[in-house]
Image 1: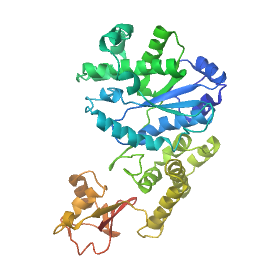
Image 2: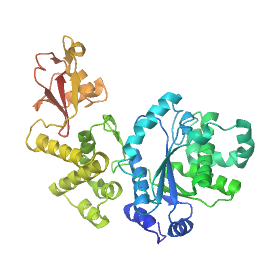
Image 3: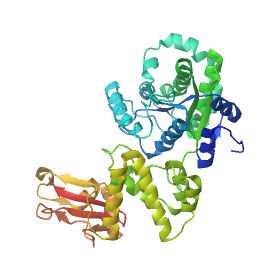
Image 4: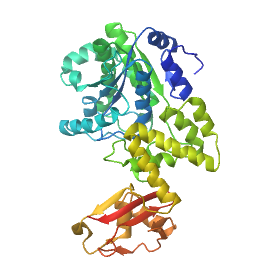
Length: 417
């Protein structure tokens, strides 16, 4: 980004590494300098929680409000019924209205930790649901009034669609409509609430550009788009995925300790970048911490973990997670806040294999992975090497909780309820 912004928001975005591209830097900068403006990001309700991959967008909305503007979190109650095909190899499973509503209820819990929906000021955040205007659309009217503004030739040229077709993977007509509906969202938000900016990951570029064009054509509105980079870790892995599955933001789907531990396990090369994106520490301090080496970089990782966990789960949960980590790693203890698998006597029956317990506790994604962990001397039982993949654990062995470990950094307790 060579443009030198005047607005505080664009300055923050630039300095902290949030910007991949913008449709019009100068126009957006001028708009942000002229008063309180509204911006939105859409979140489809495909699960009961967002995961870490969405956190960069949530932080963008947080910074938008902190710099004096009004963030809009748009729940995709309508668009989730279609499913975003962007850079996917196959069609998303279709969800019913009840499941979508349950997912939205789960997702809403996260936003209140980052964004203020009740500050009484001009920049009080709004949470909206696009089902409000999408569910009542008349198909023929929509085709005539909105569909005529979209060129199939141009839609096919967008990378999110083109990559799917180039791999000769099917793209349904249902999915093809997604970008039209998202464009309609932007126009409606501009018409109803004066929203001038849509933000999202760089995979949303085509969808955002369509919304800008539609808003200009239909209601002669001037709006803008800003995208963030699609993050991968320094070793090329997709942000938000681990061997144990998605890193969920809801505490009932991933404990604060496991969330803290995810950030503590950050690669050395990612520490400075992640501090700038996911915490509010000053940029200079993030750069200083990211340049540390050896034992000092480990202290920086712990600080990263504590800062990010504090934003999401609060100070007490972050402190408890850090204390547990210290107890487990420095003192070789069990810790009070480790992820815990509680089995009933009926579930345990006459016994359960250690492989099953490793999978059920979330330390491995499959039995095959658990067996490989044991074979490669990566598994431990109560801090002792675990070498027998056929070991059975019965009620006697669980007279007191046992501690399972995968490598040096991932642990879980197993107990009888």
